Each structure stands twice: as C-alpha cells, then as structure tokens.
Length: 136
Image (tube, rainbow, N blue to C red; front, side):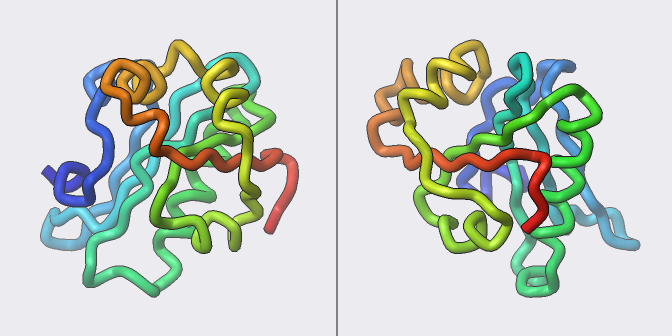
C-alpha cells in the first residue's frame, strides 16, 4: 500500500531477486523504502519513497545510498532509474540525464522495464544514471 500511495511501480515486488528495504518507525509504520533490480553490472534503482512526515529530513538520500551500497555489494557498477518528477533529487545524488533506450537495452529483463514496455508507459519516462563508484 505504501508504494501504491507513492504512485510507484509494484511489478515484481514478489520476486525474491528484487531487493527492497523498508524503514519503519517505533510504531511499525513505514517511513521510507528503497530497492533495486540487478542485471549484470547494472542496477535499476526502484521504490525510493518517503512518507510525508519524514520528508525533507535526509531520509530519502539515506535510503537511496543504502540501496546503492547494497547494489555495489551485489556487483553493480552503474545505477539507472526512471523518474519524471524527482529529477532535482536524483541530480543531488549525482545522477545525470541518460539515454532511455540504453537503459532499456541494459535492463530489459527487469520487471519495471518489462512493465513499462508492455503498458506503453516507457515513452513517458525519463532515464537517469550514475556510476556507483562516485559519491555526490
């Protein structure tokens, strides 16, 4: 429900290969999430969201960095993502505008790319990328 309310893609969340983490508060409420899908040396960053009360606290950046670090541990060298609304956030974390077709080629087997291609949503998406060796 948290990701659905954040208007994020739900496809593949039941796949054990998709890495997804949630931070919860003392009452068990989700404060934020982050995850990725791995394809070779590339990670598709997904599901980075922060609950309204925890926004502007740095939690989104912390969760994203946690996902980057786990992706590196899994062998990824480059991070990719789709974002139409949060470009400035991702730019602060070192992402630059990327070629959507290249993202699709490198990450074609991921749930998110498969869903966006099948539904026609891909044409509306903006791709972003950065090397995981860099620190913002």
